Length: 447
Image 1: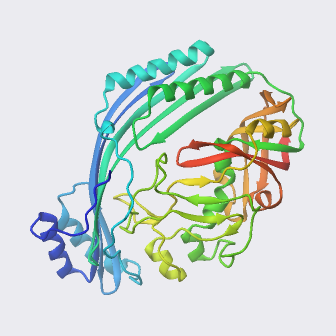
Image 2: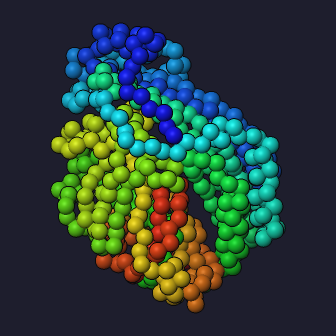
Image 3: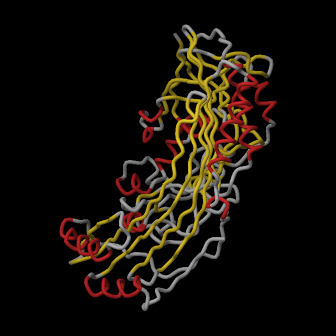
């Protein structure tokens, strides 16, 4: 369970400091964070690093003469120095045209695993060795990279408006990659996972086996010509296709009026089978929390519901400037100021078994990984990139990897009128819980 509180003890050092800060600034927000972690990495089949880290810091936003100054330090005891620096920076800051978070207690809970604070390097090394052995048993030629680790941390936010929230969090993650460079053929595949609790070794080994088996298929090349095809996007590739929607509901693009969704709240923009939810409380979701980076309680919210645009993601400032209510979507680190972001992206599953979608994708592509999509014009809905791992579908199966192929699609059009089916099955890919999506008429270039 996460630890929460909502009142500053004025006899504590923080309480005395915030009382003093209240006499120096017209309004303030103090953010403190600390954490520790342990990570083990293998590279090219060999142990490459055991890294144990600790981090901490404090940042302050202070208001003077109606403007906000910001300063931070990696030394949490430098409260006076950071406060004075923030006040000195205030004349150069933005207008304080909103209010810092007021007192509010989240009614929710979220898992906390103390085991993430007790990780053993020998155990993590053993897991990486077992991953390597699992992969080698399937493909002895593949070079294996692997990392496993986790940690714990806590963050506290205190404001002049009465908020004082403290959250404790735990995290664990793994990454498995297979590579092989043959003459005229470079093949790579990977899997990764994140959670609020220690991921069982069996689960990591299962993912390694899946990656190795898919890698085996990828070593067989399949001839493919340019043209329009049905495409089945795996969850690992679907996240890229959804990026234009995430950018377009972000409060920053709404405030700047660069999003095409500015005047579309309540409009049906997509196929009615499309529902996207930001869920900070999902039991299996690695993202989220009880409070956002400004101390605002988080919410489970659909921003696309049955194809209809139902909401945006805001910080306190973007919400105020857009005339909307805060949504609890501020994200930050000690050294950065808050910006809107998503917690756990959850897409509703469909009615189609994956096996049926595979059959319907006959002669088309199954895409697992895209490369270079970050250069796309997401605000225009465009997603373009190379198909770094895609397979020809024949007889309901992936029969070989296609090489030197790329796609360029418009997400807004694709998810409005080209959906053939959405799978019942879903998988976690980082902080996204997504199904398989089959669409029609995707233009594929090939050489």
